[in-house]
Image (cartoon, rainbow, N blue to C red):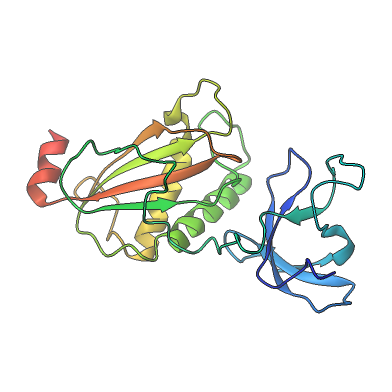
Length: 227
């Protein structure tokens, strides 16, 4: 099974399953592979190699409903921990409307489970999702320098064009901002250091994703925004 390679990311085939895994250990001919959560590297476990399909389609062209398939071609696969600090060609919006200061973009991996204030989750499940989001933001912000103060705009990129209130995803944005603190980008996320996160709705992205747009602030700029 030469499509199973260490470091490659597989996504669940079932359309309602957002799980993403990364191959940690596998040798050609092994019955099982060691995998971990793609976003965090946590929860290493064994999985049958036969459940890791070369494509998400069957031989007849139907979509598989079980197992996993490669998320992208090998040439396109990139580790989720790689910070995405530059604007891609598809995202030309200037979320800070020409305001001064250094700007940084921290994108979470697509297809992550997100927290919504309308959800009614058991506190253990909520804590688990919060931890994954926080860890993903920690990994994605490795290239961002330490900032004394920052203005943060959180952009929700949905996977369709339905109407949404992006403020409902505040618990997800809050977990991601905590990840910036864990990384050392910010000393804390209290009101003296952070303006925001202001929540916006972005363009459609397959699988949906959260992106933090961060602007470095001087003391006076932060004071002006808080007025």
